[in-house]
Image 1 (cartoon, rainbow, N blue to C red):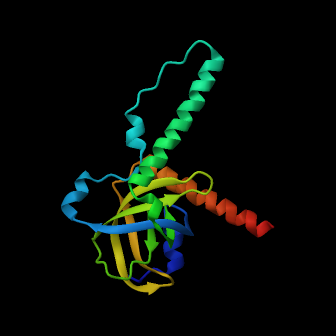
Image 2 (cartoon, one colour):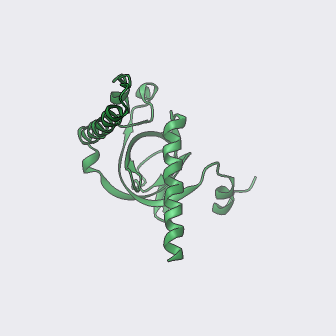
Image 3 (cartoon, rainbow, N blue to C red):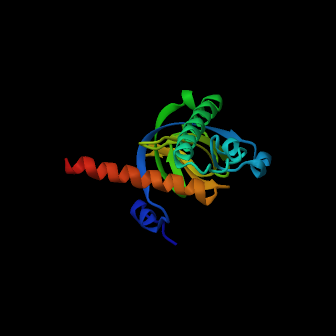
Length: 179
């Protein structure tokens, strides 16, 4: 069996990937804790606890209440991001897609290690994510990345947020090239 080249691997990927600079940090978590970890959008579990109010008959009041509700939801998201430490993340270059990411960790990890990754993605409306991934390989830096991570315990909603970000970034790159 021959080793696949980088181009062959890229062609066989299930999801598009993009090189970006994003606020992020990571830490190794103990494998026994992984069963309780789920990739998620920061603050969404808090918002899910609030029940929606019924719409009043008056359309003007309904629109006004929807506007206030949207603003309150954004305030809750901002406060949650702050309390979860997303306000002080360092910016790092990563290669990210719906299936995983490559990042520079200093090569101090072992295949099979489990990482918790806090990352902010989004160009227009930032989204704070907690992602969990298994280290596939880590070693000498190939280009600027030395660690490959496959996302685990990720649902379709979170994966779709990442995919949306990748396409949004690719679209912006194409716009810049046309200028």
